[in-house]
Length: 203
Image (cartoon, rainbow, N blue to C red; front, side, top):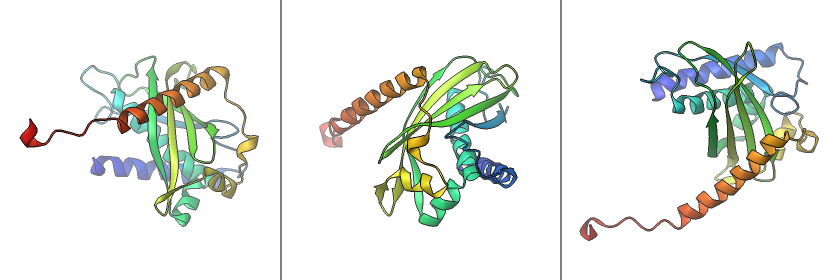
């Protein structure tokens, strides 16, 4: 997987840095307006036996969109300097329309919630020519530094962003966020209550 995935991540970072080099520095990508990641469904890496983009490939492209966003905003450079890592804790996705082989699509990524621990990003897959929705995903993540969890506020301040000034998500995304937070809490409780695996002698 590393052999295939690492070059795709590197390319996403290069695209993000190119966007940053061309920008004025005050676009507010991913915060005051969505960052737009553009791609095409690759025949070799994304398409499954059903002839459309595999469900797991959507999550791969969400990750590539985040790499591109962090490089475009300068967050990646700051995180590397501070030895901080963006760790995904939960992802929820709803598929709406299939993406066919070689079909172009966009992912509109925006921060919709954050506190002293969590960051939640919305990834909206859209058709570039019509804007029609193809899928929507929510990603909850934390920042890890020196073995502990750190507040995302310092990271965002370093790139000139104030969380308190970010626009509120529209009603549909806010409702999805509340459901995602409830599901996250329920899954964490379920994980904590998992019984220990039986030992070989007990099977």
